[in-house]
Length: 376
Ligand SMILES: *Cc1c(COP(=O)(O)O)cnc(C)c1O
Image 1: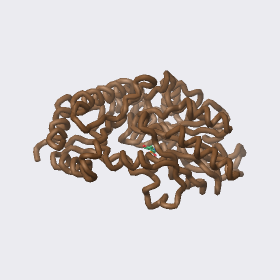
Image 2: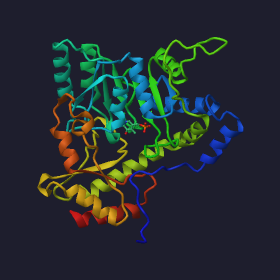
Image 3: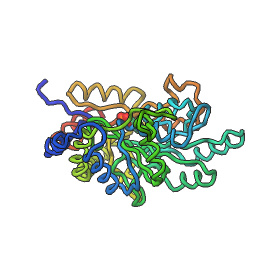
Image 4: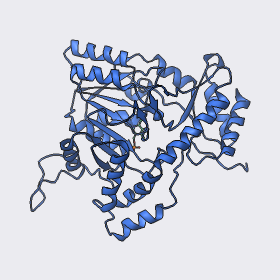
């Protein structure tokens, strides 16, 4: 095959990456802390409007610390999104807490507020008030925050936002990740921007960020020797990686615009095909990034069609992926309590994620669409 491979969402580094990394090296602050870390955190705060931020070794680590910050422990219930990547839910199990899974809704592909209320009421009625809600903003689409916040306020349940796929997404003018008491971003290689691996914890509450930083650095107490009263972790990002992050933050808005254009291209060309529906654009209330552009096929195509398309495109050296397999269908969570489930299952059965890398050319997009059109 002589066609170059089109990846799903490869890293897209900025032209000045080597310079900002060299600045980190020249400073000799190559580990933690360092000037690039401070700069990177400030840039994320400025862009998202977060009041406080701390970079971490991964988005998963940031979510783990968020749960610890809220005191989530063994036996506690955490209400969480069912349709997501395992990285949202694993941290709940690190705390030995019990996830209770909530299905998505068609309007946002994210947590259904009606099912959330049902779950909260049921848990409260049986004397198990949930310790937290941990929701995801999937594929750069925002969850419908207002009704969810209302439920959380009414029952006084703290909210954590997994915004690892949604840096750059705004809901009613507010950047996602800031409505909850804690939020997490990710800089893994396939995300909106990358540091080659990393994450960030944000919060309006300085004390929560300070205590999380303490835990992320092995929980060293202030003393002239090594003194520990709490169990800590080694979860901080290195200053060299923050150097990559600084150059990435400078181009973040360009990357958002590129992915939004990719979505528009797909929507225009594929959305017109009968039986093909693009993911919602949420344009009445949000500015999604469309981290990954996804489509959904009509059931009349038959089960197995998305997998057949995936394989056909793979044969043309084009990478696509199935939609996340819902958590309640994972062997790991076979026994887990679930509210709804049919919508997520249908997206898994009939959905497909298309190549969405911000460096894609119009020629690449044409190649993907031409290959898809042959299958539809
Ligand atoms: C990527 C991702 C994570 C984890 O982020 P890492 O930085 O890879 O640890 C968590 N949740 C979701 C939904 C993700 O897509």
